[in-house]
Amino acid sequence: MYKTIVLAYDGSEAGQRALLESQELAQWSQAVVWLVAVMPSPANLAGYDGSIYIPEIAQRDKQRFQTILDDGLSRMAAAGHEVRGELLTGESVHEISEFARKNQANLIVVGHKHLDSWAARWWRGSTSSALIEHAPCSVLCVITA
Image (cartoon, rainbow, N blue to C red; front, side, top):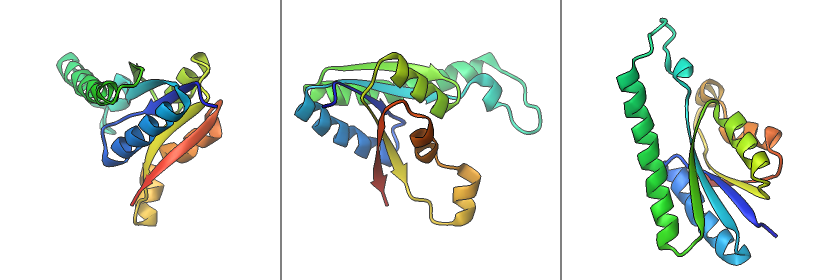
């Protein structure tokens, strides 16, 4: 049975479907749900052209990710679930896996949208596929078309 669920939440359509699935799982198992949003570290925000770090832009991005996280937290709380949240910074697969490990999570829930072309799949990669390989626990991928 799941006692601690980590939901990797980004506010996307796939993320919102994962939020709904997490609500059902949390209700069924009486689990504590952690919502985590992962913001790329400032070094990862630099462009290929060697862009410089601008604190105002970094602060704006942090606020945007915090707003997404806060929205997910309020949705879960409104549904009556015990929910906690944390904004993480870094590479998403590593940060989510480490967070789950530190919090002894039994399940990670992540939204996944199928990409239409092979080029899009190659270019973007798949966070959910990589997460399955690195996670310390089970991973539920909630699929959207």
